[in-house]
Image (cartoon, rainbow over all chains, first blue to last red; front, side):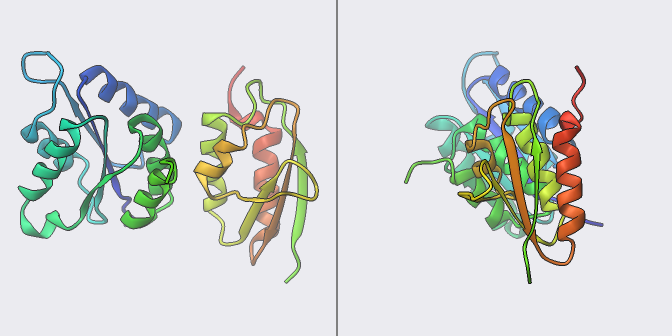
Length: 130
Length: 93
């Protein structure tokens, strides 16, 4: 079975995260495992470590998971979520330094070809000016 | 090994934007051959398997897309890519 790298979208806004996930599904397809989360439990803006861990779980692939984040806390909470993963998974999840919407579509396009986690990350990060 | 070449007029309404770029790149990645894309017969050439570079071409409607490919499945790759562009990226009206 060929498995593809998973993609996780983490935004402060549930609407942004859901919308980005829809763009990935409709533009790239469903062959890439996808997880997303956004907002705090009360419906406000925010990110949560628990929700990010659950999204990583939904998108899990033995080839690894690439996370796309929007601002500040999304990144730090994602890094915290990675640290809290069990050891065998911890080393196979990366946060991409890329814009969330564009990065997610680019990363998923790369992932759909069966690329490695490192190649997926590199493609997403091509968007970021050096 | 010699490079095979092909070209096709792109009639897609919005040009080589997000969705067509993703389709073209995904198709190109399915082939073993090295595949380049250009907007003129002499290049400059970009890697047709790079989604970031393909999307950055921003080729408008009515551009001619040039492909060149090198490798064991170069002919099949060019046929498939030309068919995709000629078939309007299989998008409905």
